[in-house]
Length: 591
Image (cartoon, rainbow, N blue to C red; front, side):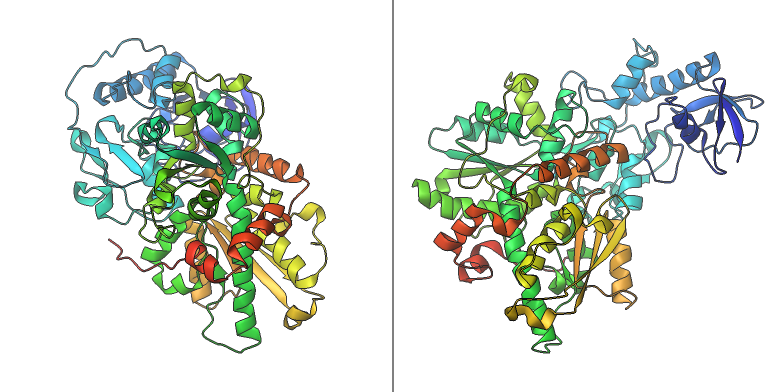
């Protein structure tokens, strides 16, 4: 194990550790604009330059492995001046537009310039041609702000395995984007927004819909309701300088009321509804396969909550589309129920109701516009804001978020269980489904400690578990003794590996959860930046705390879910459920 010295600190590290990683072990910060945790270093931005004794020029710490006896200086005059020069050159080409940029105050380049004491731009010169790409519902690209750090390239290719964005050209004429300088809608882009989540500047961001929400709120003829996804409550506080993982559920509700929404509801209600429909669908498929001997039944069944995952499957693995649950996502179930069941209750026409979603996900913007999502007779969900957009909107309204008092969600679409809260975590949808399906089948309490299925928790890319059905109620006797095998994948590259194993016959499961984004929705493309594993873990822990703090922790125990079936839907997988809560997806050409 090499021994090195960093700023007079003695450090022992494993072989192959980079200088940047070694510095973190002794809490020394080296700035970087291109590095992504867990991905291969590329040394593209050169901001992480450090001095190494015996080496003539500064070296990129993110891509330089340590050697035994190495002496590193991260804050010497040579290192400081080299780093400052690199940032000054980046600023000279960057079309900052800082006065109106949505990253103002949240820009890594701006912050780094301040930390390095840069007060003027020394190098004035030509800037690359600027173009704006607003071709997709989810994302906006501004080439003038791009600093060619290649983070978006890394996350799109290495983490997601989609490959929509590449570096093209050389030098001043280089361009980061789709092939042949196309727009995003001309290539296979799943619109997950991970590129916008890692972009250090304002070159890629969510398609801003704040003005659309203000317009709806200002229209006295519109009844505007809002739903909030589970992951929002564990991340929104970061927009107001609160630590990652701070639960702000009550303050979030209070802020939404002050913004002027007619009713504040919870996507978690629809998450409980999803479990009832999806769990019943799984049992139905198992019955057809095991009792009826129907060999055409598509197993394993995949979850369908993540729209980025759906987009990916449609383009990359269309052969598994029959295996994907027909359930809509909780966002879309909520919209359909709000504009039928709830609208009828309060005497509002569906066309006069506006459903706004607050989501951690940019792909939700695309999902809301899909042609399959108009089953209420009009568009089920009208507008989708990301966590970041909601944070900006609250600030625009002059609301002092930190001083708000907790308030409760409205009824009847605001009551939810702890099982719905953990939908935001990788493994959470699977755990929520197992809690309900196990108790329906066996009639016994879910046997796992604290109701958590620990093998499918955490940030490992692919996880699996087995749940043995030792006893059953008479209706499900055919499942007695069956070992139900489940798997969980998050991040599309991990999903790809899992699917390829299944297609090759190397793995067999009954039920699989796939979440598009690393960590699940808590790491969504619309969450506050910058999200690394420490932030993901804090948000995950927050949602587990939210779950554990509730009296109701199983979806089938939610009294308002029971009520909506009694009054409106009648039964899971029933006629009305099929009309409003289920859909089918079709293959798309991969470009």
